[in-house]
Length: 183
Length: 430
Image (cartoon, rainbow over all chains, first blue to last red; front, side):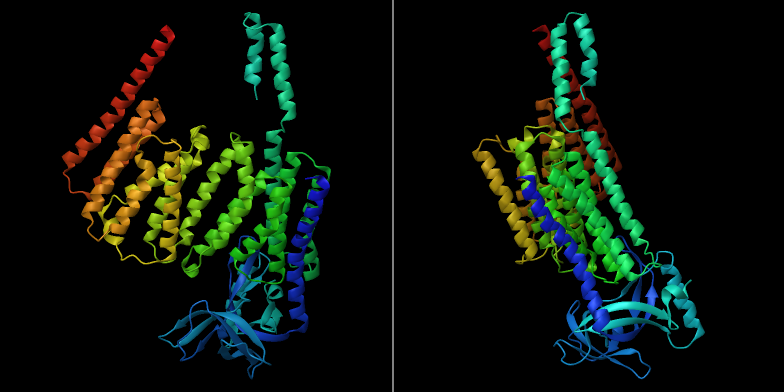
């Protein structure tokens, strides 16, 4: 094959290589600008990813809920209808297998159903918050210290939700962004 | 490359072994040959450099520079990608040397991965590693063919293996089978077949002869979903397949070190047979046969291996009965017929291993190959060591067994050495 033909095919490959990350950015930006913000009370833990760097894994309070329905299967895809409670934090209104209409909802996975405690554990698709490698562990410690200061958990994740998709914007401790809080 | 030989030339001329004219011709021949072939060392260092720079960029950006805004970080994530694309584009357009193609391709490969990883980092997109790896690999496959790059083909196989392991292994991935891994390998197969056709004896082809079977060995376990025991038959059939592929004249006529199929096939078969030589193996791995995914894969591998074996016989590539080539069938029959009575299969497996060892020793002595001879003796030693742990034989009997195997090592090697010396002396006299 001539170099010019090879080059033409390469241009198509290069466009695809640029398209995928660009598409990822645009998708996230749209949810951040048009979505509804919710505050998810959470607890951060500090692991790391070989390619993406250090992140804090978020363990959400509302990811486990009491229910007598024991028909849930591991790794099953579900829709979680979200609403605000009296304190302005997100709470689960309903977990369903049918796509809800006219309500804010998330697409989540069933982690497991605890038959003994009659508790359904869910896995939300926004449980990783990437941080500067020097701050991730400090963030976990800061959350632990902040817990001692008050009775109610004061660490929350700000999540934008639109048509079932969610983008994690930031994590706050006492209303201060976690990256600034640990400095 | 031939510097040693070149250094000998003046001495050969001095002692009138060759004429000055012949020496000059030899020199010219090797100089011309060297100029035509690409500088391999330069290619290796170029690729290593690109690999380290690419990985370094991933690590530097993974630090997460939170002083920059999201927009700045997004732009930074695209910089290595665009840079790599411009270099690769230029090299394809100008049709530069292999060294440039391999190095720039390697850099672009890591740039693609780093840009996707960083966008995920900047926008906190979780996603599992397997889907990330899949996107990364698929976006880089065309580069293997556009740049005719062996390094990219090897990276492709390595990352496809990583993908299959990440997708299929682990408690959370129960019930998931990485079928796409097979598609990924199929995508790089034309490149490998072209290498086998055009450069069957080159070092790079030998590397592929090792990494491809190794990749299959690593990933086959991820195709097992819960029905664990049949995994042994799957692996035994795979080793049988590799051994039989390695025994075809295309591979077996070359050097042994280039034949990864044969070595993996042989070692794997012996290892699994040793594993199955314990009585607990047959007590634990007994269950009624069910039509599962694992059984289907096992049957597919058995049929494929048998087709190659029958074809080898029909082409007279194999003469007589070779136990190790049919060992997978013996194992499969014993496994499927196992009724929970461990005595018969345990005794049979031990006899098969002993026979494998003796046959290998015989092949070694027939071929005057010390490596094969000692491999056969090692198989017998391994069998004796295994029986050391699980039989109620007295220490004296076990001790005598060890002593006799040890003496066997000395005697067989000594006899063969004497035979070889005798043969060399006879040839010299002739």
